[in-house]
Length: 78
Image: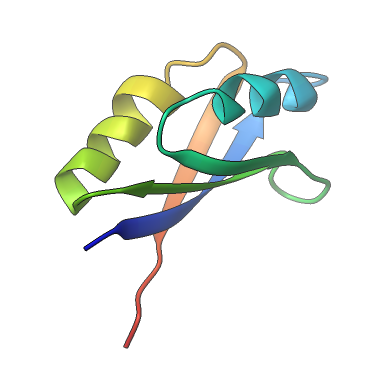
C-alpha cells in the first residue's frame, strides 16, 4: 500500500522557486511546483505508510530553508 499526500507550502517572499527545486530532490516527492495563490508551492509525496509520510514531511520537507508553513493533505480513496 502506498500513502499519498499533497503538501501545501508557504515560503518567505521570493523563495518559492528555490524551495520547489529543493523539495523536488527529496526521495518520496513525486511533484513540486511553485504556484500563485494562498500557497507558494504544492508538493505531491508518497510513502509506504502514514508514519513514513509524517517523517518525510517533518524531517525532510519542513527543514528546507525558506519554508514558513506547511499543510499536509493526505489522499483518501473511498
